[in-house]
Length: 68
Image (spheres, rainbow, N blue to C red):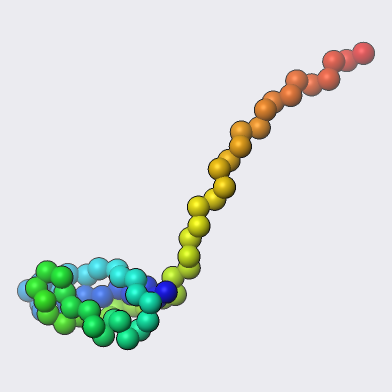
């Protein structure tokens, strides 16, 4: 997956958003959601899949051993 920062090419709109796409070719098909104009790509990066961590199990405190 690829992340990209894009901006609308219409100066009166100039909306900037981050998008995620599967391929670079999909970026060519995008248009501004607000006005429908074409977009310009400002930055591109690889998206790493984030997974939720396993739930944290609270540790039980054990009392210290009694002194003999």
